[in-house]
Image 1: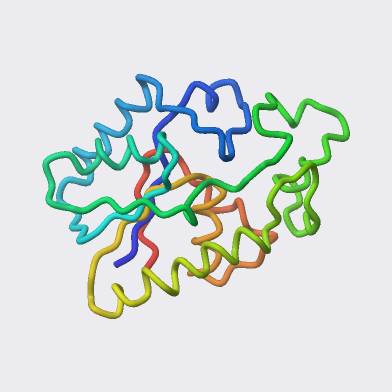
Image 2: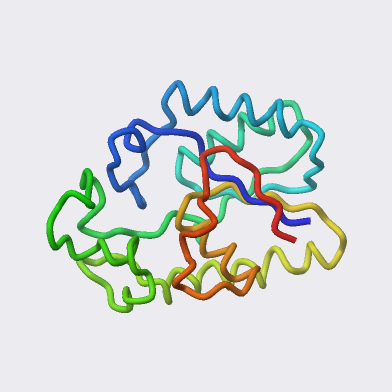
Length: 183
C-alpha cells in the first residue's frame, strides 16, 4: 500500500503565507495534530517512510512514527513545490493580479514559471522519478510505504497515481495530518 500525509500546522499556515521551500517548523498545534495522527493511525502498518527534508515534514514523521520500528528516509525530491519570489507572501488571493494565483485557481493555465517558481512539469518530473525509483519497487514487493510531505508535492503524487488531469490538481484537498491511502 502507498499512503501520503501532509505535515502538521505551521504559523505560516495560519496566516496564509506561502511556504514552499522555506524551512518553517511546526507550531504547537501542528505537533498536537501529529500526535493525534500517531494515535489515530497507530494500527496502520508502514514498512518504510519517505519524507521531505523540510523540518515541518521531518518533525511530523518523527512524531507520527515515534516508538515504531519504521525507518524515515529523507529525499530532496519530496520538498514542497518552490514558489520562488512569492515564498513568504501572505494572502496571495487578496492581491489583485498576483502572477502566481493561476497556479492555485486555474492550474491548467499555469504553464510557465513566474518569479522563479517551479512549474508543474518540473514538480511532476521530480516526484515521478521518485515514485518510479523508490516507491514502485517497494510496492511490487508488497511493502507498505508512507510519504510525509506537503500540499502541492503530495497533490502531484495523487495526480500521478490516480491519473488526474492538471485542472484537478487541488481537488483532493490535502489536509494537515490526514492520512490518504493511494494504492
